[in-house]
Length: 313
Image (cartoon, rainbow, N blue to C red; front, side, top):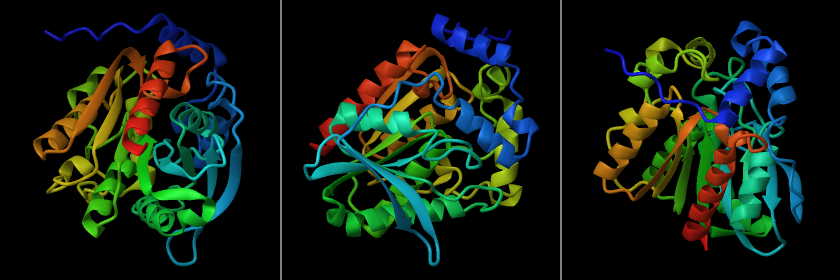
């Protein structure tokens, strides 16, 4: 007998009802260019207002030869601060600096650290492993050049949500392999498996914001099926996780990705990696960006900021 799904919180139900009333086309029913515009238009409607900060600066970060990715630096003061490299969500196809501006401001404001958000290259124009290459190269650049921005590069963390959480996990493995010091990896509802085949993908395939058809659309645009067992796409398949940076997870109970987030946390623990994990009940994927309506978003932001403070200060 199939076990019923856990109930959604009142705030989460209200979000889904608002989305249904809006009659906006589903992202996976339009082109990637149209989906990006729709996501930008709606991404911060239910997020907190953009908090004022002492420093908000746009810049370009060199990644692979010939490529400079836009980035945005957030800092709550002009002191020499430790820094979080933040990688946005959006299924490797949508999302960017504008869709995650409020969240990055909150992480900087609440933690006291600087946040550098990276606008890595998106699929299908730039398929796997372009986003991985940009993320890893950006971390290397930050460690080498961050001091010129007034940042303390002795204290660096990496983080992201959804696809950005995947990229953060992968970049943390790369950092271990090349000897780059990382204080923390901040993983918000990350994807870690190759084929979207865990029980939670079945349980939450429809009606819970991130739907199975949308996941398939993201995957098909980003990566060929033959490459999906590459650990740089599915970090749960990495051979060895020993020695990667300590991890802080923020997971949503009613999320197709929740099982793979839990599984990755278990793999890290088995490898001797310190892990903090909080599972937020009754909320869906992307809840972290719904702070106007979903109280769990504010709790998660505060918890993530506390972990950053503990790791970086």
